[in-house]
Image (cartoon, rainbow, N blue to C red; front, side, top):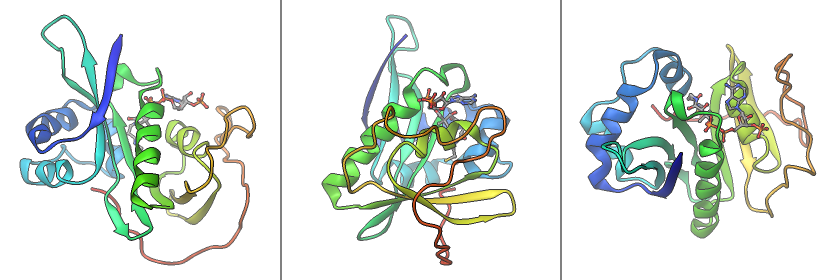
Length: 191
Ligand SMILES: CC(C)(COP(=O)(O)OP(=O)(O)OC[C@H]1O[C@@H](n2cnc3c(N)ncnc32)[C@H](O)[C@@H]1OP(=O)(O)O)[C@@H](O)C(=O)NCCC(=O)NCCS
C-alpha cells in the first residue's frame, strides 16, 4: 500500500467530510473525545483552511487520491498549536500516523511553534505511543479519563531508540518523564 503526505488544501473540504464519515464510530469517538457522526462541510472548510496534513492513497484503482489520514494543528497562540490525528481504520498501524506527526512537527518548527497540545482518552494506546515519542512532554491534566499532553517540539527529535516506550501495550500505563508540573489552563479541544 502506497500513500503520500501533503499539506491540506481548501479543496479537500468535501473529502474531509467523507473521511470522518468513513471512520469507525470507535475511532471517531477517540478522535473527537465523544460520540459524533463526523463533521459538516462548514467545519471541514475551517479545518481545511488551517495548517494541517492529509495522507492520500496512491493506488492505480478508483480510490487513488482518497484521504486516508488527517493531522490538524490549529494555532492556540504564537508558540503553540493543538494537534489531533486520525487514520482510516483499515490503514492504521502501518506508520501513517507517525508520518503525519512528522509533517506536523516539521511545519511547527517552520512556524515557530514550540509546543503541541493534544487531548486523548487515557486508554488510547496508539496515540500515546505516537505522541510520547515526539519530544519531551508533560501532562497538563489527567482528569475524567482524558489526558492532555504538552509536547516540546522545539528541540531535535527524540530518537525512538533512545527513549523508553511511552506506554506499555499490556498495562497501558504511560511512562512519566521530565516535568511533573501541572499547568492548569483551559485547552481547546479540536472538534
Ligand atoms: C492514533 C492514530 C492516528 C495512529 O495512527 P496510525 O497510522 O495507526 O499510527 P502508526 O501506524 O504510525 O503507529 C503509531 C504508534 O501507535 C501504535 N499503534 C497503532 N495502532 C495501535 C493499536 N491499535 N494498538 C496499540 N498501538 C497501536 C504503533 O505500534 C506505533 O507505536 P510504536 O511505533 O511505538 O510501535 C490512529 O490509531 C487513529 O486514527 N485512531 C483513532 C483516532 C484517534 O485516536 N485519534 C487520537 C486523538 S487526537
